[in-house]
Length: 177
Image (cartoon, rainbow, N blue to C red; front, top):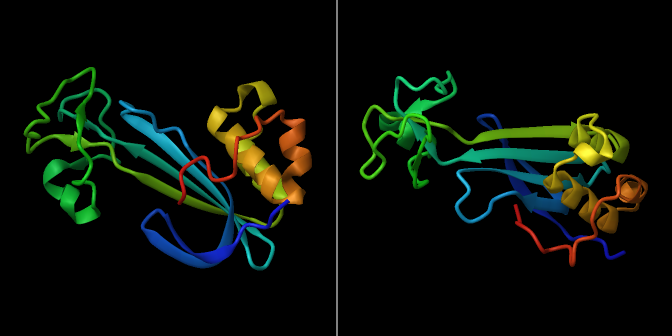
């Protein structure tokens, strides 16, 4: 088992930016060509032996103001630049089909959501990643990350093997946070 190298990383937790020294022991994305929504997941082993899990939910979907799918977390297009959401090319919601080329000024955007969770040990990290779901209900993204963690950190080996996590072809086969 080759130890991953420690480097300075930066993740967000809501609007807070966290900067720390750690090794990436697992990272993957569910992004696929043509995906309008996807998740990114990374597990870091901090220098003190604890773990930081970064969960990012991304979306490129735009909605009309009257759409039934609109919620309080969405931002109007004219405010997107303030939070960096103007860079993503938008696709219309399948229900309301707002204009996206050019995007309508009153369009509401699904925004990127950032969450960082500290886990004191591998067991807590696995609990956070699996959210109490049985093995057969784990998303492939979680299974991929657990397999990578099991390869990079002996503390995760028993969990990734017990969950039947797929063995990735190589540690850096997915997104690098």
